Amino acid sequence: MPGRGFGFITFADSAAADAFLEHKEHVIDGKRVEAKMAVPRHGSGGGGGGGYGGRDAGGYGGRGQQQTVPSTKIFVGGT
Image 1: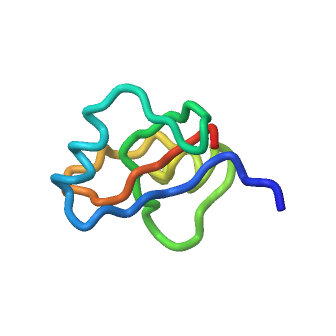
Image 2: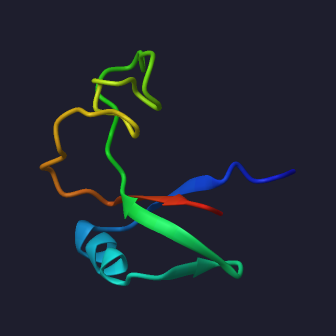
């Protein structure tokens, strides 16, 4: 089964996630991947027009408010 091209990594605590993001280059299974802090969706309905979570819903492709709570979840793209 082919990969979806992205995934998520959940760390035990936010300090570990921050330490992971301090490294600029990440390689998984021989592929260089992009890693950044995951931004949670707000609400349960998602929304239309702008990616995961909708254009203004603050989802992964949205333009909502920046996350202020420490996160333990990292988005990884290009897998």
